[in-house]
Image 1 (tube, chains in turn brown, green, purple, cyan):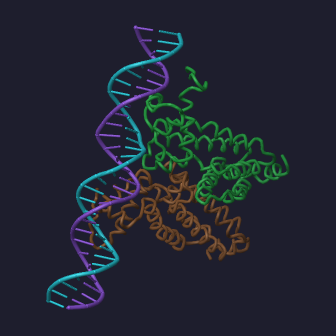
Image 2 (cartoon, chains in turn red, yellow, blue, brown):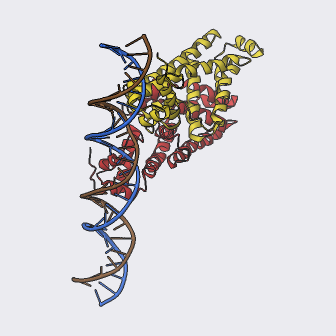
Image 3 (cartoon, protein in one colour):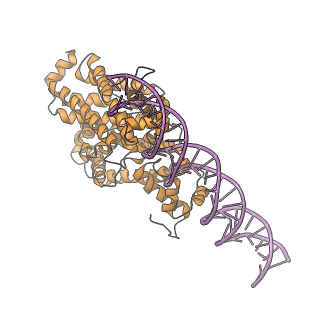
Length: 203
Length: 203
DNA sequence: TCATGTATACCAACCAGTGAATATACACAA
DNA sequence: TTGTGTATATTCACTGGTTGGTATACATGA
């Protein structure tokens, strides 16, 4: 395995980086603490100095994905041209493109929640739930600014489509399931009619 | 096809039943072959007589859920009263009710695919993909009979909502995420206008 | 007899987590 | 400057238990 002996990066971050690669690619219970330590170029005892247990390490792995993930969604949205539906569709399109990469393995938060479903109070699941809540709240606020009447309802509907896409595309290994028409239709239906025309014209 | 001495149920089925309970509740890698054998009241050697490997057992576990699961969806649909959207909504409502049970743990097919995402060709994943395909095809045929113009597209959209609901409700442990409005809106939008009125009137 | 099915006992590899010792860095007193 | 204390950071060696899978033998019914 690759020994990451880079001395400039703090040990704790190197361990999280190694955990991220291994847990995301292979799942939680399929990866041993020894494997993470080896990939980080650190003895297991050192790992247990920085993290009190494997569960703690798993939580740190997901916590490390929270902000970067949200930032990516915001970037895809804000850099897209056109109407509100077009900007939301851009998220789906970028995600479909990511899903074409051979190392893509779905949503780390959802996969962890699925694997640890027998441990409902697990810290990693709480972090995953908080992450999705943040995304939902960002969507809601965005929709509210655009004059959507029930922005929370629409935000949750888009969330269902997005997380459903993660699940189905992972199962079939077919990114074409990540379609944009449903999101488009739901947003158009929620837009006030006049605003809909105005925004659709290019805004 | 020989019948077991004690309970009258063939050994192989008892093992699959035990595997179903343990794998669905706890996940694949969290459950040892020994645990399945013990729950089935059988030694591990007997289990390995009926299944050539743990992977084989996992595949059998999902295969055993395929038909009952599809039958349940069809039953919920066909027993519901009213228009096409109302009958599809019935599936979501029944699912939300199931999700309130404390032992509910989402969709076994999706969870297995998520946990074994690092083994794309795994037989269990193939069975899961085939299961979802069957459901998609049943939806498509149903929609086609109702005169939907692009029945496959709508079937896949409903699938995204359904599997998204599985994922999100499992993550948040909140069945209220399993809403029916999005499905309703998408179906109404896909129905031909006149047929929509007729069906909505009570069929 | 012979195929099917079950049991006891066992394996080497691996698992999460720990005990005890040590190395490094810096603060502060002599 | 030098010595010492202390907190941080890291290592080696190890534990008790579990893992998927197997070798061998025994039972049973057709």
